Length: 154
Image (tube, rainbow, N blue to C red):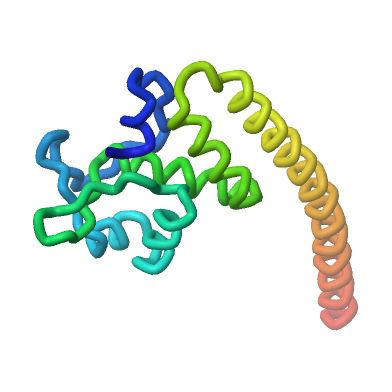
């Protein structure tokens, strides 16, 4: 059973981009190596996510091999986006726990995501300032290069 399936309602969807080459729901039994190919994560990372509670309840085949579903791939897509925000792993694990606990945790999930959003916006502002410095330097060197070329051609 996946993180999303443990909520019972399925109302908290992962807004992942649909991926090509996925199997239809019901026939979506992916091995760990197939998930590695889909996500770019390593098998070690997938097993670690499972160990720390970020990816619990991965189904197993009768031989004990992990079997992932489309919902698991969607969840991993969301986790990847949360990683890109710089959200600490502990907060991602907490978010996963809240999802499993059910709809009554919407408020806490909202707060966690809102805080992360504010952090991302602050980083974007920082990066815009850094980009402005780079643009000024690039412009300076472009102008200096043109001036040098102009002097040489005289």
